[in-house]
Length: 226
Image 1: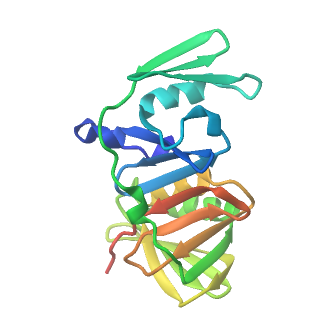
Image 2: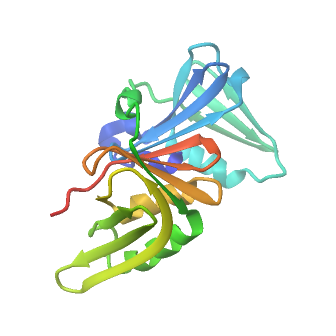
């Protein structure tokens, strides 16, 4: 979830990752106000019932770098700090003393339009279309149709790039647009061979999940296009 945290120090609470106790499990949440990532972990013993802490995303980035599949990660929570133990390495960071926004308000209760797309095919098409998207400055449009999705990017000085990929779609055909870098980061983060893109309408947040992997959710704000 760290990739969704903000790097803007003026919004200190958004530079952290919220770790909160949820029904005998642990939920991690990060947002920069343009996207939101949520991951549920079966680590209920980490926090007390109802407890939550806000950990700097930079520290968790370093923990990710240090951890390998063969090593155990131990976490020790204090009142004002947290210690991560990875083998012989101890990393200590202060917790962020700030209120985190109510992220649940961003999550729509239902999604009437759902596209199911091959993850690798979507990543490959995004990579090619992004070449024209000028580092995220140009939105990528997704035209959602019953049996396919058309990705396109249009710039006034270069032209248009488009790719069609197979997909299944249930709902009202529509075109939605996103920041291409944020969309690619979300698709890359989900697990599984297929991605489910759930949409309310072109102006409401969309949600990405891996098919069969409901433990991770990536919410993405759309971009308004003509």
